Length: 476
Length: 96
Image (cartoon, rainbow over all chains, first blue to last red; front, side, top):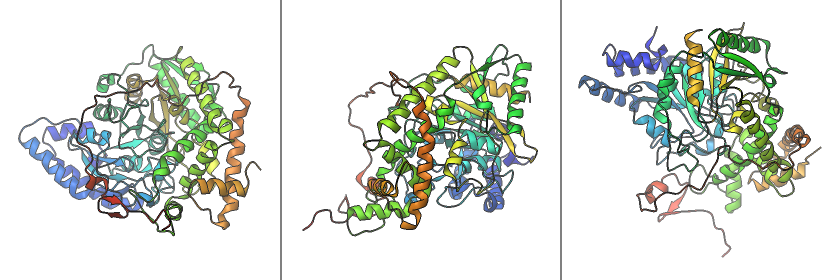
C-alpha cells in the first residue's frame, strides 16, 4: 500500500516511530497529485511550498524527540469556502477569484494548531450551491472511482482528494448534504456535526442557519481525531454552542449492543435506487447481528423537506450574497454609475446556479410572497424538526441512505435544476433540524460505484453515531 | 404559469442581476417549475405552528466589552477593487 492511501492514524504511527518522515510523506502525496490532478481536478490551488516547509518543521520536531499530535504532518485539503489567511479563498466563484483573506476561519485556525500539512484548497460548487461540483466557476471535479461520474457536491473536491490519494483527510462544509453526499459518492467517511458544534467564523456564508463545517476522512477513527481538532465554542460565532465537547476518540469502541436504530420508512420509497436500498438494508442487518435493535419509524414530513430547504436556503443566500457588490472586496466590473457597476459585477461574475438561488430567495422574501413561501417554509421546518424529536423518543440513532443513488454521470442532471434538488431528499432534513449525520461506505454498485449510508444522531450526540459507525466499519 | 417574464425582470433587478433577453424564457420556465413544485407545502396545515429560524435554542450571546485588537485598515482594504487614501472608492453616486 502506498503512503498516500493510508489513514491518518496509520501515518501518525509511522511518523512517530520515525519509519517515515513528514517530508517524505508530503513529497509522495504531492507527486501523486501531479500524476492524477489533471484527471480528477480536486483542487483550486495547491499550496506546494507551504506544504514542503511545514513538513520540514514537523520533521525537526520529531527529530528533537518531541511527541506529535494525531494530525501532525498529515497531508490534508481544505474546502475553498473556508478562509485561510494569506491563501487565496475563492468559493469556486469568479467573483472571489483573487480574494486573499486577511484572517483564518476558526476551524482552520484550530486545525492548524495541530500542524497538519495543507496540500491545497479544494474545489466545490460555487458558494457551496450544488450537489455535483459541476457548478464550480473554474473546473469540474471527477470521481476517482469513475472519471465519467461526478464526485458529488458541494464538497466534491474535498471528497475526491481523500478518495483519490490527493489528501489524507479534508475539511468540508454541509448546508444540505454537501459533506455526506460527496463522501457517499466517493466511498469515504463524511461527518456533518450538530449545527453550532464547529464555529462558522470565516466560513463564507451560504445559508447561515444551515451551514456547518465537518470532516471527510478515510475511516471513522480519523473522523474522531479531526473532530477533536475543530469542534468547540467560539466567541466569534454567536451561533456556536457552548455545550462541552467530548473526546470523540472515546467513541472508538466497537459495541452496538442494545442500541436502538430507527429505519425511517419515508427514506426507502420512490426514487431510491434498488442497489442502494439493498446495501443500506444489509447494513441494518449487520447492526442487528451485532446486537442492535432495528425499529421501523416514520418521519412523516420528509416529503416536504426539499421544498422547505429550497425556500429557506436561497432566502438566506440571497441576503448573504448581497455583500458581493464590487465595493469592498472581490471582483468589480465597471459601469456608468454605482448600481450599474454592481449589476455588471454580479451578472458577469456569478454562475447560473448562484443567480438562480439568489432570485428564488429574493422572490420568496418579497412583499406579497413572504407569507406563502418563506414563512410557510419556516413553519414546516418546525414540523420536520418535531418528526425527529418524536422519533428520538424511541430510538438512539436513525439509519438511512445518504443519497438516493450512487454517483451520476457528469452532465446528466445539470440542465434540470429541480431534478438535481430532488437528489438531496435524504440529507436536507438533518440541516433543517440541526442534527449531526455521518455517511459511511457500505458497498459498491454492480458498476463499481460506492454506496453510503448515514447515521443520524440527536442534537450534540455525535459520540453515538461515531461509535455506531466505528462498530460497523470494524465488522464489515 | 406561476411567474411571468416581467416578474423575473423585477426580481432580477432587486437582486442587482441582469437576465439577457435570450435567457429570459428558460430562466422563467425553470423558476416556474420550481415554484409549482414547492406548492406542495400549501397542503400542510400550519395553523398555530411557530416558525423555526434556527434549529437549536438560541439566546442573546454576550461577551465582555473590552477593547481588543481588530483587523488593521490596511488589511481590511487589501482586497478592495479600488481604494484611495484609506477608503473604498466607488463610481460617483450623487450628481454634481
